[in-house]
Image (cartoon, rainbow, N blue to C red; front, side):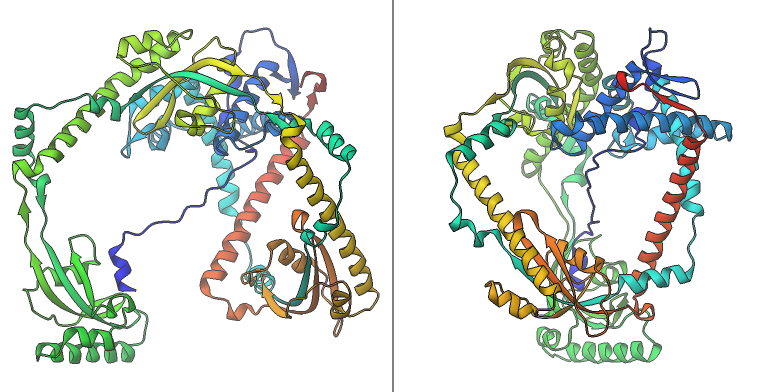
Length: 637
């Protein structure tokens, strides 16, 4: 419990890959690139043209975005599919309608709002503050002028205002929340069986013709992927810092000007006994806990073994086993009341009870480690590292803009940038769209390498930010096309795939047969025994507690119709490579909203509000479509 306070809190993050973003920033205002050019029109929205150039640019931006978000793991056939291309066009159409409508409604973004938006974006910040160099480089990589980018941002923010309006004005009634909780907390009584493909594998014999046919008809799966080698230059703080050698005078000057940085702070070794009492507990409970803490403090001062008292009475399980020992404590680690008490005690002294949100603590200071200043020699290594890092950062920021300019303005070679900045032109190993060793282990580098401007062999890539202190630019060195692997090389793989597929089909066939027997009235145990399949014990399952059951089985279970009293509903579930399952639903027990924890009630309400607000926004957007005249020229897609 309390020992956990010593660790810095970490907020959990959920990272989800989106296959396609419906209204993405990448698509706003692309048409500004192409004004004045002869246009091929792919669609018209109330007479406003969407040009082929705008559409193609948006398509490439969206492909790059999806690949970047997925770490390069989205299949090429997906981002090149007709469905993907059509969705990008639909997104542009939505954007045109939304921008026009929000403008008509008078939504605007002031200059002050625009400045705040730009400076608050993390991609333009360094160490939490806006960085003009990073901003300029990002716009240059996107081939945007500040005016074009600001126009996009104004448009996006105006649409965001409208969307937020729908999201924040949504409401749900208590009755709706209760109905949702009834379903959310519902339990279903069930048993299930699973027919695994492995059961049939020993019986399967493959013909040579089947192997050859599979090889011919699935040749795309047995190809060595296209691979590249690139040459690249890298500007990094680490490399720049490595070349710097501070002088003795510089080291001593830094030491004298920053003595505090090379001082070990005071630390205190303490033990404690925690008598737990929740902050919202009634007064009697808290008074009882306080009196117990006072008694233990008196016993410790009278000579009782503090460690023994902690082992017997402390509610902090983690430290109690160690006699209440919390180890060395520095400032800024514990909660303030506890920390203030620790740093006010003399060595060997036991405190009065100290109240925190965890209860009441009796603290003993077992050892005081005073502040200690490092000598110059002791700090020398750290001094050198700090100076090298500081100078490296200065050089990096000085050279970053020049790096981007040279790469962009001299697109046919990396040599000018390398010579001007003293950088080595390096070469990568072979890598595919799935990445590779060295520099190709970075997804953004791989995405840039397979961009059309690089694949053509005629241009440098855009400048790629590998991390906060490293930029890379590359160009094509060699390219190996995809080629079909010989049948002999993939025979074992094909045989395994065909056997598994055949076994899976047999598992499904047997499952369907068993399901028919069950629905005709036979008992689950009888049918399972006849086919040598085991059945799980009957158990209650909820959406929150699935008891380790395959999520696909649980999902099918909660989709099944409620059985009549005394009856059983049987559901078959195709588990793909895992075979076939049958779930036997025998009873449904609805949840009781009155027993729901406050956190679950709030979570359910928030979920309903989000869905309602987003649905309202989608209805608004669909209304714009319904009232618009949209013409799509399919032959131009």
